[in-house]
Length: 139
Image 1 (cartoon, rainbow, N blue to C red):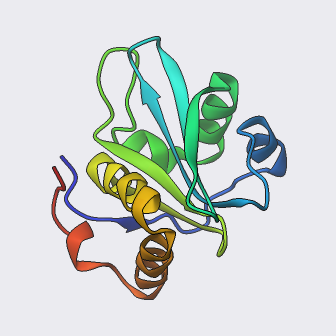
Image 2 (cartoon, rainbow, N blue to C red):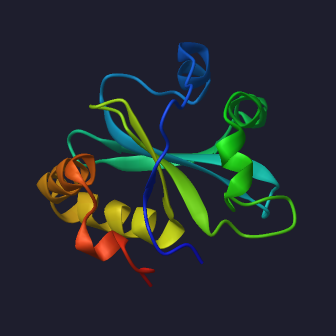
């Protein structure tokens, strides 16, 4: 399992792909990965008000991201045959893209349902460097 968050520099996210992933200005952050159960692209969203939602999404958009951003293929965002060990985390407020251990995303989802300000603080730390708890796998 990956043990750190990686800033994906020069990452290309076309507006059309975001629209296909149903991303708009109400979204604070979102994660993209592949789930072998159902063999689908998954997009999970954290809204600015702390609401967490998402699920199966446009798999062709996921393939487009892979084509535009070969770095994705260097990480295990899941496949038809294996669970994701990492996710693409998008800080929608700052337009930053990170590859994070999937456990980090699960923890963010949990934090958002309790206090979305914790997620905002995490994203701020991530933008400045790297939060301590993202440096090691999160259960």
